[in-house]
Figure 1 (tube, rainbow, N blue to C red):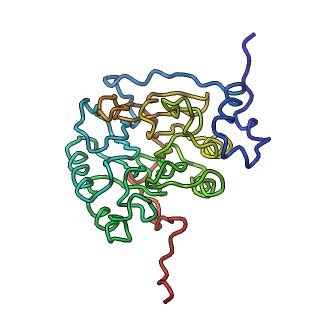
Figure 2 (figure 1 turned 135 degrees about the vertical axis):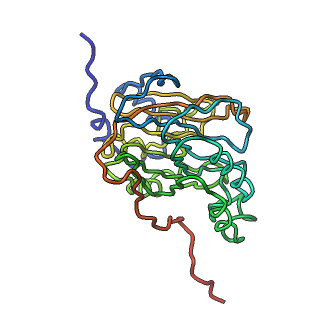
Figure 3 (figure 1 turned 90 degrees about the vertical axis):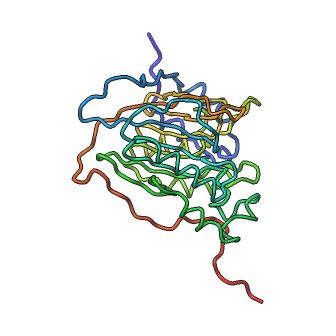
Length: 301
């Protein structure tokens, strides 16, 4: 008789704060209690059912020339790292790419290479907000729906996007594992259908060439105990692309660039039935993103 897996949330009933900073330790224990099923994505030419929205997923294009064909669909999802280092001109170039694609809606989040958007990024000191570049960079992002801890509904399907990931060198949108990331994930609405983050959760699309796991423990805990999205789309780890499932959520590492930064990895496509809606496009509140540790108060002299 096949083993029937326990509800996913039960694994987290014994959660302790030390788990947050021990991704490889958690991954080993998840391997015993939870399945990771490899999933064959929808064929790019598969017929689209009536009353469904087709999503096309990509990520980590890094201002590279695409060596793939981007399939048709209703909504393009780009999960961050649209640039090399996030300078204004790179966002102009990215916007031209978005403009060239036929999808009616393009939903985009930043990633750790978008240094010009994050005033707290260590390597971004010369062209971040402190240098007056964030506003210029934001103005350069056009022809898409840009999400930074915000949501949008398209055809009644709620999409939430967040750029944060566990500390990764001195790049952008970095937070320490544990409480700082937990506070970010607490903002994800319970009724999210499609979750977009730049970084992966633990054990899905997060395996680095080193053999270590880059995924976020608390992101997975949030997904499996509260949010339960239908799809989670991310990138960041170029060498572990593809689609997996835990039996409840589908996880998509949509990285377009491979480990050698060549944009050769195919987009991943999925369909979702439309939800009830009166407006085809509904934007959530555009609240200002919070950058932990940043003060806007003038320094005392």
